[in-house]
Image (cartoon, rainbow, N blue to C red; front, side, top):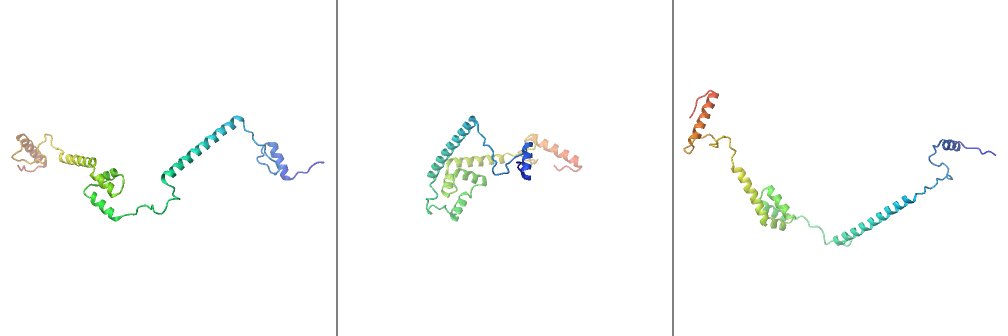
Length: 189
């Protein structure tokens, strides 16, 4: 006796004959489980052991950190963060008023904290004072050295005084004569 196939079963039969069948349509059909080779099973076992060891390591590390910081669940409400104090800000402002912005940043870096006491201690520190004074001296020295526009280093403004050496007087006079000739004007010596 020949079994009559439904259209779905016919399609499945054709697909299986062509090798195109991907998933079972009927619930009765099952795929055969893949059997892993012993080498791969051993590798996965090692990976699993490694993962478990890492998990245990990080769990211990977490517990240590938790005990060092204190458990936030067991802390009481007494240890609230310090609120903003405007008077402390005014004190810090007065303390840093005599310093430039760069010097103030340097002091704040050296203080390590934004509390008034730490900043005051940093401003009174000998190393901080020496560093600030050294920077101020360097800036003053750079400002004191004028840029020489004349080749002989004589008078920068081109003025002649009683102290001007004769060599510079002659040079300045020549410069004025040449300038007057170029401009076509009179010489005012």
